[in-house]
Image (cartoon, rainbow, N blue to C red; front, side):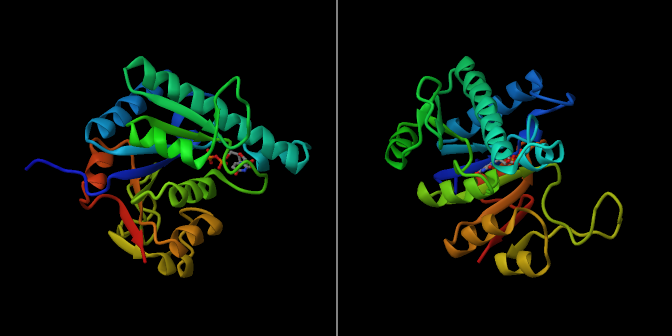
Length: 239
Ligand code: UDP
């Protein structure tokens, strides 16, 4: 049967690492192109899509502090890494004819637009994919928290966190053959079982603002579309 979207506006959180592909640092062009095609399919499905991209493929604040850089500078470096990734995604989308606009939490208006909720909404309503970069614009946060925050601000009906595993399991599925995938969990279960899907700030923001979250493996063909069509895919977390 034909799939139709259950959620009209979706926020997709993608880690910087997902752009690494087979590389050790930076961006694998094949992964980037593949990712752009998946986004194109979502737009063609009739969904307003916002993306929050991480920076872990380039710099993470915590990793930099280990080399002696102070935390605040390190976090700004991490946020700038997300801008680099966002520009790459914007370019890959435009190349295949998908309208896309990077919006940064930190003003840098020769490079991209500065985030305002109002302009983000207007882009989304026109079918332009918005790519939110520079996280929350503040050190000591993560791009997961930025994703929860933006999802709330734009009134996303669903947030998707793409990971390497197709959802949350009762144990590590790579080590324990009896590990079972949870098809559904509440936010409070995620918190009490300490299932480290996102940091606590990000989880609590979603819980308190009732944003459903689906954790899935983007590498699995069709997973994103199935999730947006409301089908069982990965793990659904809600209240
Ligand atoms: N960061 C930050 N504030 C934010 C978002 C990110 O300071 O609101 C910094 C932080 O140093 C983080 C880095 O940017 O380590 C990259 O983001 P993140 O680790 O969330 O990327 P991901 O793991 O998703 O690739």
